[in-house]
Image: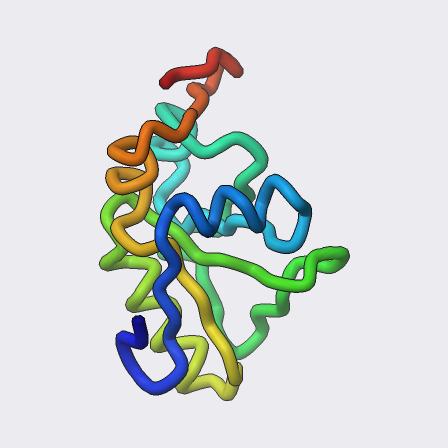
Length: 116
């Protein structure tokens, strides 16, 4: 589903498959404390408060970068800012971490402990 012209939403299962196959990397735009409390294993932190769309570049070594946050609102906002800065295709996790967990997909805490 397209939110805007080129802001693409992917379902949690589709994101999990892309990440598991190393076709994509997740970039979490939540803040440090949220990320430390619970996150998707392997996701990278780029807090919204420090996000600079004009200088942002995709993560090297991954064909696709998928933005995420707690519920999808912040990642969609960052996606729109990236499109305004000239990025052609922006993808984010529909429903964020909440949807990921609702789909029964695992998370981890700052201790590295897995949660299901």
